Image (tube, rainbow, N blue to C red; front, side, top):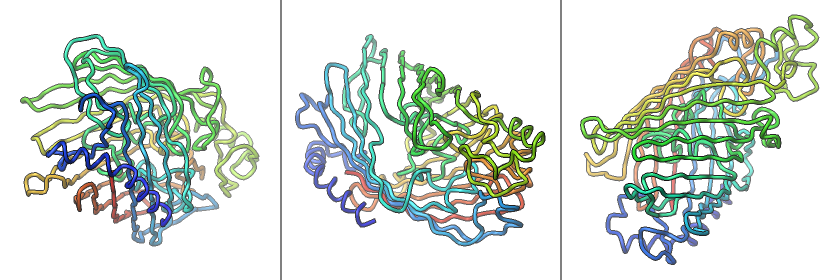
Length: 479
């Protein structure tokens, strides 16, 4: 934690001069996202470079809850029923450079330290903190989160001003344009964006509201991958397609080096609209993953045909279950595909109030490979700015989410099987449900303190366990 604070202070010193320049030149900057000015820019509308930083620490407390059983018969993926404390601390620097006309390069080094609840086991889609990484530890870990090149070609029509921000140089672009992005980044840096939800450092904490819980997007254990994305903008329409490489093994760091054989594809269509003169957006997304992953029915059939092929006897990649009476995905992994489709809608009600909805259904035939243990999901809620009570930089949000599993996934779990995140040894299946409410207080300048409450019914889709109450505090600084 001390090391993370030193990093945050160093980034503050590095960027303070640029931030002060912006505050002097733009009286409205106090109510906007902080801008690190680029002194080399010809005008305030086109930056040659910029630099941003952030520091976020999140502490959450889980109350004790009722559980009829925990890790039944040697299974290992239950949420522990006792009280627990979880934390994450992250520090990030965002560096952007204009390399030629229409060309931008971004580099994003990052640090994280974390302690998850129950070693990140026992919650399906409703993981309490979207900053948690599957490869994290309490010791600070430094890595490059992103390194990518973006090229834009304009085709005329109206001029659109893109404001300065992390991973975005200020510039004027055509409303009809083609954008090509290549490199190391997160798929949800480009796909499934939403103005009112998705930023776990300023908005909702729970993964249910970060993106579709059922979106098993290609990523390493930290949430990043390498890929190529093409986007075509035509006034109020946008179409984007991307291909990214997938992990060698599910939920692990090493990535596969065969993008023609194993890959994650996504196609998204976006439309800007107005309802009663209030702006909104709708996005339709379809994804297909081709990976070396196990099907639930194949794992069950292998165990039924030969009980020796169980969770304790596989020498290949597995999740370490001690349940000798259960099937295991390691006996079923081969080249399989997964398909899902989702709808994402955001709508302004007033200048200070916006609502959102996300819903996705995946085919539910195969294991989770890179995201949450969810086969179908919905989430909706409201976000409100504090202008109405003279706190223009405060905000609060309320959201509700529900996640489902496929019937064959439930059958596998009821036989004692586990996947990357859930598996109590048996299951009394009901959809997993989450409620979250937060209030985000602007303390001074570019610092915020958030109080957060989450309530999860049927954790791990198991009505024999829960409900669970989680209380959280988040400190977020921007430089």
